[in-house]
Figure (cartoon, helix red, strand yellow):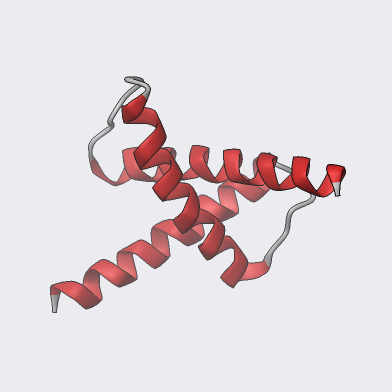
Length: 86
C-alpha cells in the first residue's frame, strides 16, 4: 500500500525534524507526538516558504528533512514569541 508507506515516512521525517528543531530551539520539549506534529507542520512551512522565496528545493530525503527542520525551527520561534507576548 503506497498510502501506508507514505504515512509512515511522513511520521518518521516529522519526528526527526521536530527532534532536530527541539535541539536547536532550547526549551521546547513536546514529547514524541508533539515533535512529530511540529515536524510535520514544519515540513509544510519549509516546502511552501523556501521555494516561494527562491532559496532552494533540495531533492531526496536529506533535503526534505532539512527543509522540514528549518520550517519547524521557524514554527518554534514563532510559538516562543507568542508565548512571551501572551
